Image 1 (cartoon, helix red, strand yellow):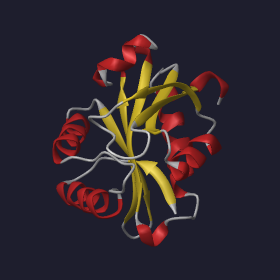
Image 2 (cartoon, rainbow, N blue to C red):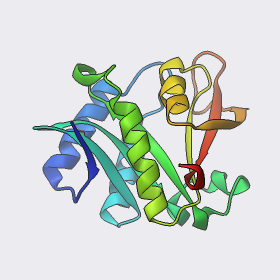
Image 3 (tube, rainbow, N blue to C red):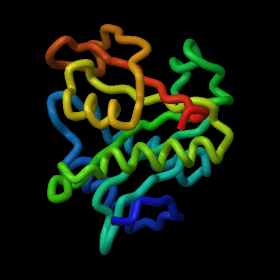
Image 4 (cartoon, rainbow, N blue to C red):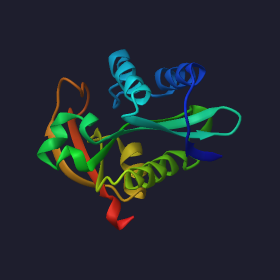
Length: 169
C-alpha cells in the first residue's frame, strides 16, 4: 500500500467523497457535505493536501490543511501561520484494521514538517476509542477537551484536541 500525496483529478475527488460518506459516518464522527466541499476546495486552492493510501484505488486518505487555512479556533493554541491541521482521516472498511490510518497520520506529519509547520493538530470525539488509538500510535497528545454539542451529538458530546510537534518526529 503506497501512502503519499499527489495531484488529484475529479475522479479522485468523487472516489474520496464516496469513501468518506460510506465509511466515515458513525456516532463519533462529524461529517457534512459542507465540510467535504470546503476541504476539497482548500486542496484545489493549494491550501491543503490529500494524503492517500492506494494500490489500484484509493483505500484511505487524510486531509492536511496548512497554516492560515486551519480552523481559526486553533489560534488559541498556536499561531496559525506555524501549524497544520488534519481534518478528516478515513479508511475504506475493506482495508480497516491494517494500520493504514496510522500510516496516513505519520505521512501527514512528514508533509507538515516539509511545509515548515511546527505542530500538527487533530481532533476527535473524546470517546472515539478507535481514533484515540490511531492518534496515540502516531504520538499525538491531548491538550484540550471541551463540550461541543453542535458537533458531537452522542456520548459525552466532548471534542478532544490533540497535537504533535513536527520537531520531535
